[in-house]
Image 1 (cartoon, rainbow, N blue to C red):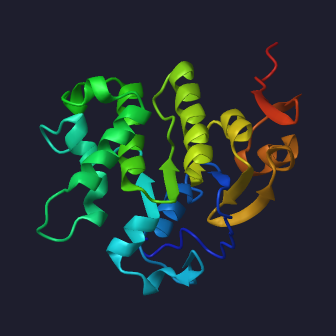
Image 2: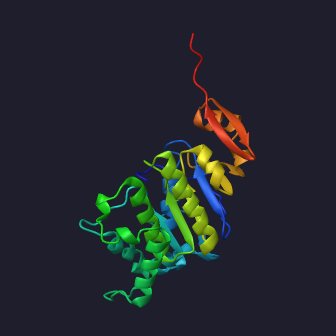
Image 3: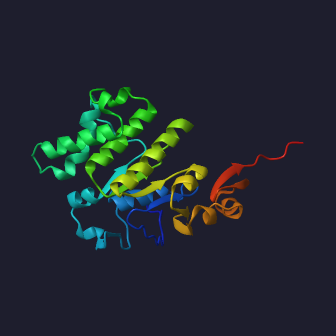
Length: 247
């Protein structure tokens, strides 16, 4: 991007039904990797979606496979919750066509699944952060794609809404047999929910494995420059930052 290599030598495999969270310091390439998978930017190398080269799939076909939830989406002015969630059906509606019963049913199901039916006629811009995040996920759910990409899904949410959103994603993953790939800054939350963590450093995968193997004091010191203590919470690591000793 801009003449600079943001990702280089990334070797990554995500299995069907798996939840993989990409972590790394600011500028490591996390969001860029999601955008590359979603087809929003191009890059060298080979990207396979369901065993086929992504380049061999048309944009509409690719959108039926992948749903991307970005950190700060552009919300059309005056869009209601129902209208915005309906945009998720775009890959299934023919050009110049209109939504049909199947599309409307998918929207209603997504709204009901995320407890958003009472908000259907509300403007998206009037919602709280937690409510808006549920709307973004509802749009991805209405899209009906088996792979969901979530870029920092807990950004700007308080601890209660962070937990609610991640619990919801995990529940939907099991109910809908979804494959989930996220980026996250909160390492404790990342380790609590993901099946596997992938640590990027300057555009390369440097550690890949279960949370207990990735979130170690040595790794976080080396790749984040952080002083932390790792607490074992039943096999799930809790990352506790350590302040400098005051004298």
